[in-house]
Length: 169
Image (cartoon, rainbow, N blue to C red; front, top):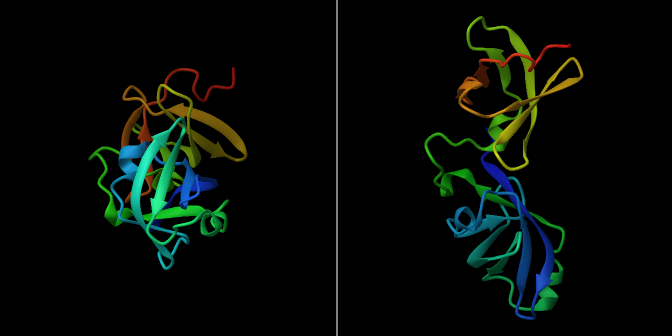
């Protein structure tokens, strides 16, 4: 599992004192506020000290100790920020998208394989697993009626498919 996870992308500067506008790829501003440090690389080498984060529409306005002017802030536009998974608390039954991608999806009753998670989408009501099998995509809503077990350590998701989920007709 990846130690450093993508948390968002800096899309612009905000004001003249070095604040940045962040397109959040995490759940919400409260998740973002857990961090003291965010990183400019997936290895956690180039860190920035997070001083504040506040919501602005679908984005966050963030302030880092190391960036105190618009001139410095300009240099960070279009950079992806990473967090250290050990610095965050998530709900017991929650999973990171990065941990779901690549998991095998199997039938909870007979272990039949349906494919591998290629992506996790969310268009409102629930997450949706984009499962690929021999180039064909199937979309599985992550709801209790279908998803029986998620075991990211075993890299497996067990489901009970609804009628029509994988049927050709």
